[in-house]
Image (cartoon, rainbow, N blue to C red; front, side):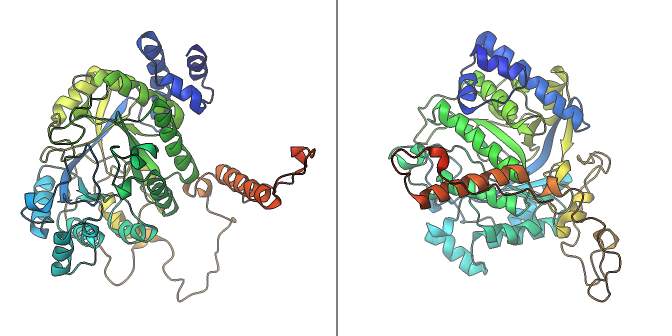
Length: 480
């Protein structure tokens, strides 16, 4: 523990073993760990031009469907058709929620739903067929467009596991999307009786692929871990490192949620002890140290009891979405704090609470933001900070530009009828290394894959042959 804390204190890189050790920190060790995490967070806020600012998003929950093909042992959101009046919210119900949220000054419409319910439930398939939708995600897309056009709220989509093609059809209708990684523990997924057993969408390999596809598609993405569901400390550390790897490769993870398990009645895990808040604080601090000052780290304020000071000390810089209208449908037994109350709790810890949009400031630009939603975002953003313009009120506007082009801010629009005599003055755009991921990390990953392939093709070295004599593929050069 002393060695790991000393490395954290000195800002040295932590390996997975050291991270696991720090996750055990308690007492004086925990206080020291939190201090190092706070220092890292504060440096990041200073660099981002928002020193002392903790953010949140003012939103409404839209539970589009509570049907799901998964069977997670701790979930109360998912249910069965007989407990619902309809498999899906109707368009009128969706818009009623969104309009009321807009009236109250909300700027985000968080679409929550189960994973592909039509794959399990006949009632879901029949409802979609009757209403003219190929699948659940087609309905999500249609409702996101209506919310944009009729209320001006910005959709944030949480539809679970998505394919590459799903990202392409949903990116034009939502500034941001999300899916919790939860854990990289295959054991919790493969073992009968485990919290993710019988849930095809909780395969860690599948969920990691979603994070990578989001990065490849330039989708501002929210993810995170869920602690206290039976994972080991080593598995928890592995989950944080997995998120860090994807974040570094693609730069597309806009925020990381560290969420603590809370037992709920009427679930298989109702008798499982809640994750302790000191455990949550240690995990947040380690996440902050591993992800670094530029990361945005969040913890839900309705799951931490009265320990908001402890959680702020651990290094978060965001409270996530808070609704003045709708409950937390995933944790309905734990109401949101009032926004004024949350502002007071944040101020008591020495910070100022500010509203942000569902998409974070660094991502309010191409290629992260599709032109079809850029105007909706700009209408609600503070042009100076990229956070929310708290005086702005959402108003519906057309989702797709009318015939005639994208407007003056969209670059050259005459290339289909003229010859480009200006061209680009450099071989690539100025922010190339930022928006397309970290080429050094991608090159290293490619080199390791090539090395493994070369060794596999060569077969075992003859007896007595030094390992160094086995040729390895050369590293891929960084472009430029």
